[in-house]
Length: 508
Ligand code: MSP
Image (cartoon, rainbow, N blue to C red):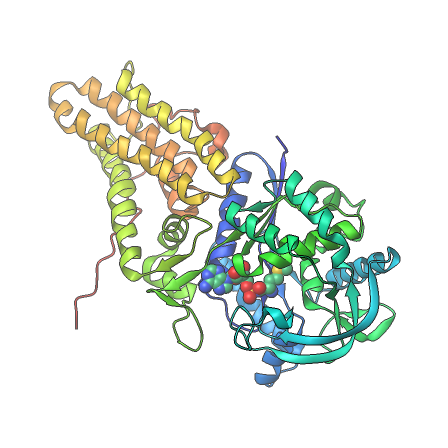
């Protein structure tokens, strides 16, 4: 298996403050990055901000700011979101950085040298909100299919010969069945490409906030060609011999929302193949969140600020909810009720209670040290084996971005462990068979350790607290340590609850 893993988030437009949609895409990448690191891989996890184009230029003008000062400020908000959400990104790229500008211009020159770009003029519809060109036939009631307003644009423009890539794209999809996931989205993209591709306008002349086209400074590079290139600029492109590029390109995964799949699964591989570069290994398109059943939009005033979720429910419960509530790939709804239900049932009752009662029984009845087990019986062994087997199950689910299934599998074992506690009744054994009680409590401590190793990618802080309470040193928290059992006699710190219940405020 490859020992490296390169995962990317989309780079976020700096026209707006971060909201739950941004946090969601990045969280999914963070979970993967953390899992892969725990699984012994060298990981590169990239996120960043998309700072050029008409939409950002307009937002800066509305704010009465110079675009560079504006992007500096808004980009900072995304950086702070990453910190607040405990994202473990290794890099944060901004498209206004010199390393990126250089990469975009190099890619442009390469495409020109290979005869893939030509000068003509564009007359058609453009949506600033989507930063996308639309054919007349695509409009729905005079708007973009996304509902965004469009404007008529006529200007000199460079074009990329996208039409020439139809067959090679289809061939790529056929020979790489996992290139686009989930499968329903793959089918949509294939239908779209089978319908024929038009050459794509890749430069604009009617505004200035962008990367200048090499040799023709009246044009700026179309913001999507600019933005997509970030995935390569961050690993050293145009120096394809650089150690980073050699090690990390092609990317293992571009995680994106369903709204931007076409750019990633059609245009981007075509640009790359046309420049003689390898396409990424996978593009995964996830669904969209609504808020209490309603589409999230600024005009409805129902945008969910991730910082408010963290303040209200706590960071790890929020991370857990986002990854558990909705089958990954499908759309999902955020509701306070569902959040509280997950927090109280899955976290406080199931996981929290298992850990809390196991650790406090050890504190009370075993002198606060890891108990000395006797011979393990079939029930003890079955439970321990189920926990160990989770590593492969979780790995398989995460290999195809099925976060909710990975969590479901972990919670199955949590359920088994809670049933085991009830069946073994260590509180009764205390009076009748203290040796057996020690074995049961040892088994439980071991189970909590194994579970906590596995929940680290989803809930890093809470899992670390559990591992601290089991005195597991930080060097022994890799998945490879799943069977490296606790040492009897090791003193344990005083146990403390890790998953608080959510208690509704009394009505005023
Ligand atoms: N700048 C482009 C991406 C360029 S990548 C080379 C862009 N930026 S964005 O800030 O508008 O959106 C980024 C991501 O947020 C997208 O993946 C989008 O799907 C996601 N979301 C925005 N609103 C969302 C929800 N309500 N729910 C889930 N994700 C959503 O597009």
